[in-house]
Figure 1: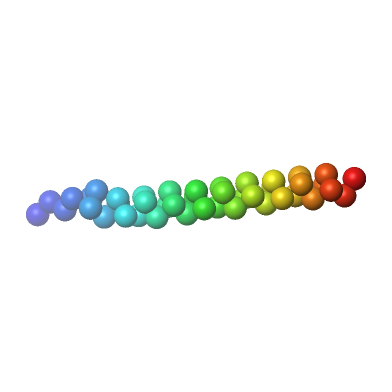
Figure 2 (figure 1 turned 60 degrees about the vertical axis):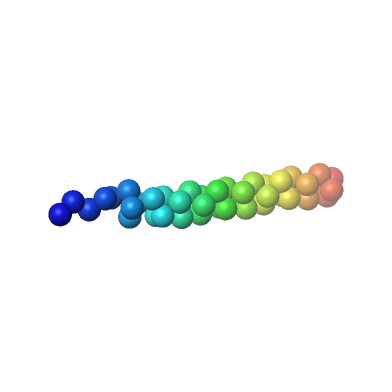
Length: 42
């Protein structure tokens, strides 16, 4: 019996990509906020 691996890996890949995008965007917003904060302070 051949099991289609893409059936199992597709949801996992989607979850991983979604997680990475969420992490990247939150990291981006933190950096933007920090730069904005530094500018306000000076």
